[in-house]
Length: 198
Image (tube, rainbow, N blue to C red):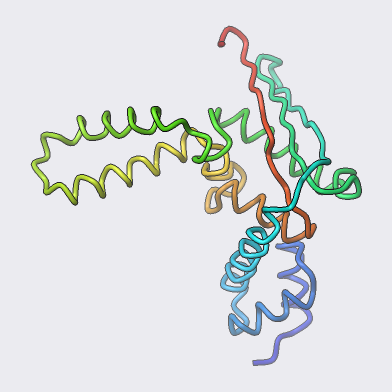
């Protein structure tokens, strides 16, 4: 199938990824833009996994103050070089991540950060809730795992649906930028302040 320059441009505009990679993804998807985006996201995720071991020692601290001045967020996002840290698109990512924290109020960065005792307590609560269901043990465990995944989506920043495009997770957003910049990006820490809440 012949891929047009217009298709490549549209995909590039939507993803920010290089022309050749966009063209290859379009060829692989048979010209379907949505499938091509999915292919690029999977490749970006694979590339992000490769880069995850690299040290991210540069970066920026971003801030977001809500319009009513009653809610604010500080967030530290690290990258590998000051070249990326100074990039406007990287700064925009940091701002969007701060807005995500403001809107969704996560407790942890990722599910790996949730203490084991918190996970166990959550599992006990879920089991108690479904005890009356009289289901086989393996079904109960599947339900527990499903509800635990939902719990992580509520309390872990990287597992939350992205507020600006809820079809993707925050982790996907970060991985897309890792692929785009060719550098590891890490959310190091964040703090959310809300008047009257501690």
